[in-house]
Image (cartoon, rainbow, N blue to C red; front, side, top):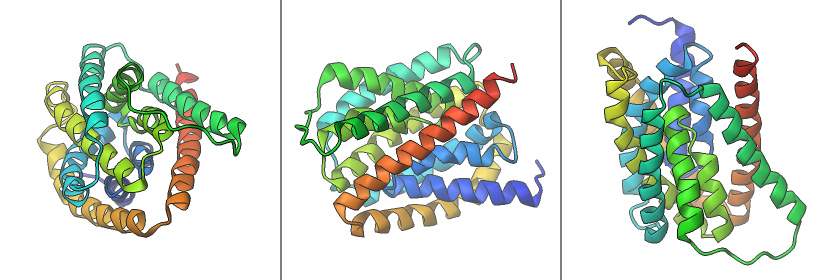
Length: 252
């Protein structure tokens, strides 16, 4: 498999974003596939990035080993497995562009809802099964299709008002499990192969640097600024997903 310099530049940027998201900068990881898709097809990009995600996940697990909410993890992982199975079963008929558009609308809806509520003090919502299974299933499905599980996760967890390290650590653990479980179906669908693994191995060190950078930024960034960053990132990423989805759908 031979790629030009443009591919490697896009792939390196995407790998760094993957690592940064696993280091705690939740949200930026969803940009990885669109960035890499500038130089190759989204399907190829997703296949190359998944093993990098898995390796970065384990690094993230070590960094956030003391920061997580177990109830959220249990709910989101159980629901995420259902979402993965749905994604696998519908892989031949599901449009990546439609999924991107829907995920973008979900994320944008949350951001607009937050603006409308303004500065009113809203009580934190505890982790609960109905909402958790709904958003967890969507997160598993969209993660399987386009590595875009972040916005559904944020829709469920942000209203709980967890502290920044617990929020980031919980996300890291949830998606570490989900990404690992995506490996077998990706292999069976042919999205992961020997060539993609070779490319992924070359890019993994960049992702690990990104993870360390993301962790340090998350650790030292003031909590108010951290969550404002998450909300702005959600807004920008949602717009990007809507744009990418509409651009693909209008070509049909």
